[in-house]
Structure formats: C-alpha cells, structure tokens
Length: 207
Image 1 (cartoon, rainbow, N blue to C red):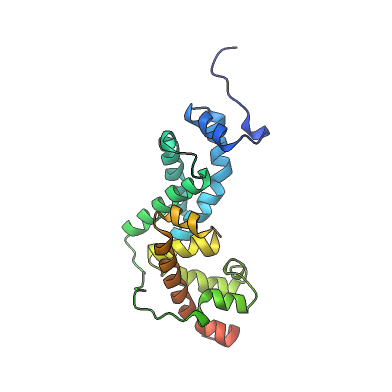
Image 2: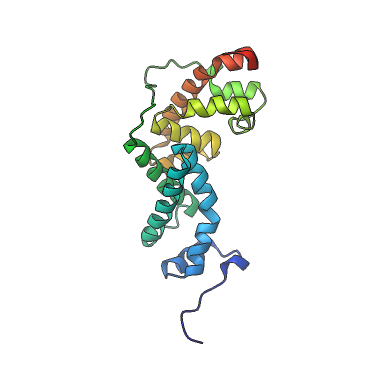
C-alpha cells in the first residue's frame, strides 16, 4: 500500500518528545493527539479569561494553529502543556485587550490585608478557590468579580487559583516573572476579597 504511514497514538502513551517529533514531521495522528490531550484545557482557560463561548472557541482554534506553526521552535526543556498554556493565555489576553467592552477596574491603589485575603477566606471556609466555584450563588458573584479584573490580574488568578498551576508554570504561561505574577495575583485576590466581603461576612443573606 502506498502513502505516508502514520502511527496510532490513541492506542498508546508515547513520550512527549516522540509525540512532538512526529508532529513536527507532519504526522496527522500525532497532531490529532496533541489536540485531544490539550483541547479541553485550552478551551476552559480561554473561557475563564474571555468569559465568552464564541471568543473561547476562536482562542482554542488560534492556539492550536500557532502551536503547530511553531512546533519547530519548541524546546523540550519546558513542558508542552506549559508552552501551550502560554500560547493560549497570550491569545486570550490579546483578544481581551482589543475587545470593545471595557469593564476593568484599577487595582493599583488597593491596600494589602492578608487576614482578609480571598485565599484566607477560602481557607476559613475550609474550601479552595476552585471548590468555591461549586457553590452556585457564590460562583455567580465570584465570576462577576473576575469579569471586572484587568487582563493581567485575571490571568494570574485564573492560572493559579482556578487552573491550579504552580507559580513558576503560571508565570511562564503568562510570560512574566514569578515576582510579577505574585503581584498580579495578590491584587486580584484583594479585589475579589473586597467584592465578596458582604457575602463572606454576612452569609448568603449579605449584600
């Protein structure tokens, strides 16, 4: 039989290096496997950042087009997932910055108060920021507050507190230093803390 032979990657777990090398050669099965492994992660991240299903779908499509176009430049010293996170995050943030609707708030003047940091409140409730999203009423309030965060602060919160990436991976995904990521994350948590203060302090009857 003629034609290019391809490998069935769906029936095995090839190493990341082998998968990338096959994708670089244009193996359609390897390219498909990369999409299958990462498409849910990319879409969920894009949806969290853009808060729009149509935008998230576009971000996902553009992300994989850029991944495949840039595979020759990918270096295995970083994980493929982290590299794809970075492309998806950058794509989503670019769309946010160029979007007409602006609902961002200025966080630069917020005062630090570790005792009432959002992460601290989550701990007091014996729940993580991720788990809090399972509470429908609180989730709606939290989502509304996240939607008012500037792009760089929203990205930090989503990558660390929702996607649960380690700080180094989150910083790499955002294309910034760990120190800058920590600053953005802290300001995002402060804003969310203040936005949810009435609910947290007064219970479900508050605010």
